[in-house]
Length: 332
Image (tube, rainbow, N blue to C red; front, side, top):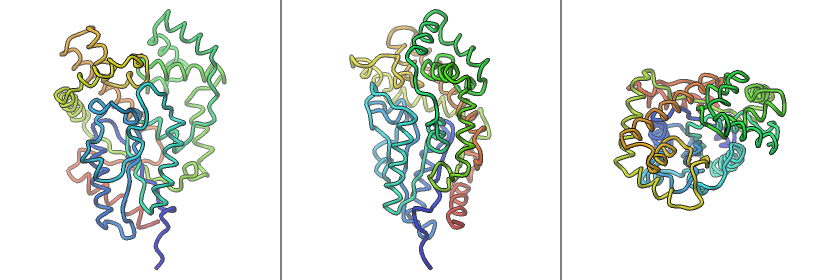
């Protein structure tokens, strides 16, 4: 019997909200595959789908895999740029495609793992048709935000494009600006653009990547997820998260308006170091911001097509994940 061509195997996309256990689940799945869990599959490599893990020097607050985890199998798109360097969804899609091609060429299975849903969408559905940036419109939006504040522009976006606004925080300046800019240029919402891209690629088998198995680890009990988020933030504080942000703050090229520093937790820790509030308030704000992030991630997941969902809190979640992947690979 001929072995299946690794190039034709489905791409595994393991998605989920923060603190849902994606990293541990992916490592366990990869170990199982490497141990012969599915005949003909000799191993896997992880492609990180996380907008914060790309930055060097941001380890504790991003829950970046530690040295032991990174040593268990190859990881890609982690620590690839400095916090002052821009990194876009379009660049991620290009980098991820290159990593996937190289992994398949080695005869291994690519595992896309993360919670940055815009990155998943950019790679799997495409966003290359979006209008290019317009400096004049951006300047007008910046001036309006200076006068009224970004929450006011978020309210404006909510009237124009409720679906996109629901995924963004009121102070997410970069993404609010881009969504309003696209609407002003084209007269169409980001939601419309994404839906058009999805329809155009339905016949292209996930934008030329081959068959994609989309799996979401979603907790059945939101209260348990919230408790995990709080526990993880406490672990980060104990591990020296504030010192990590202090080191970033001491770098003259970094400032709080950079996308990297606006990441959940980092923005709040930077403000704490500025003396805006005390440590207890940092903890409260950091946990609240992380809970809001998880809520937005779950909103994204609910709108994604063809997703197989596994309760990340189930006692047999690992077995369900292995069986789901095995069934798909055996039926390729």
